[in-house]
Length: 508
Image 1: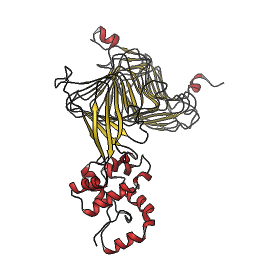
Image 2: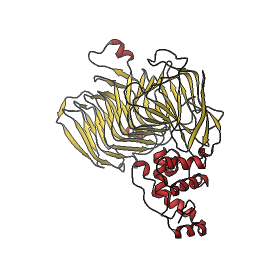
Image 3: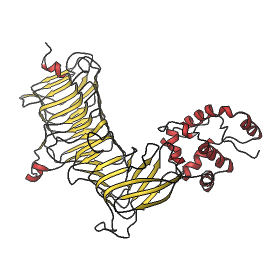
Image 4: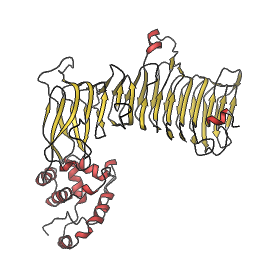
């Protein structure tokens, strides 16, 4: 008979209770032999380094009936590849009971696999939790981080993530939390917000954050560089302090990609002076709640062949408010540069309000700016009424593409290179997620001219002759040239590769 501990398949089990046996602050080097602490008091920080591969059928680390008087610092790499580490309800780290008088800080890598697996399960007393490493769980219903049965004893109730939290079922699950801050007001103890601060990645195939079982409001603060993949469920509010990428998943079960508690809102900008863009990466996204966009901020929407012109790119059930100067930025994905006067319903809301400069009233003469972030995509017209924002979009023609390059200092040869590249459907043959394709479709005028310069061949008389006799080279050349500039979006220099045959032009 497999005992209860083995059944839970816990890699890092920390069952902590009051103790009387003192132990000095220490650093533990984790190996496959594991580490065990029973009924001890760690008087300083407990720091765990090293690695555990999960090859042994026992706990990697077990703290049973122990107290940590300062913080728990996790630098170890824990892999759920062994018999004990993998399987149903596997746990990478379990903090259950007892007390941690400082913060729990993870800088390591925890990776577990199995149905219902959890990378880190927190059910103890602590000041705060920070993740600067990686917490990952794969398998049906798996969770990256579970916070349930936690008592917060610090000055605030925060979760800080600058790393990656990933779970197939949910990246972060919020359950019951109890506040026990000294000097806090009774109302805050009872119903104060739990805050999640993120400038890392929160990723799931289903729910990025699931707060449906939380006993108190949970607020998400997204800072610059945040990446969220998965639906956001039952948060009280979402505040964006910096550029954020959001990709919702299947909303048929949850009803919406972002489902807020009653009265909840998504605030884009306004909490700082930094311009902020919330980019919705999916063809269609939905928010159950209200939406506010500050005057120095924007919504980023993508148009692609997956976009249904009869369905709003972004649907908001409540009120959507724009301050003066707010923008809706359109980008192209896939083959949308071939759009010809196509009307897209960009936003559909319960009500759309354009506000006065102070943001306190509706301005009947208010204006919303809808702009294209792609030099290949132009907005012919757009309308804003009480519930909808609709834009008519057209891809720029050959002459217009050439003019964009010319206006940014491009030569005639470079103009023709780009015209042929887009006009002859070479780009449409690339996968929609191709880095070069996205760089081209979303480039501004200056970036487009630079691309044309890098793609243009050296001009000489022999090159023209080659261009008329070697059309068969185009497939190989396309792959060679485009692959050589895939680093452009990350700031790498372009590499020279191949001969750009079809787009060649010269007077030599």
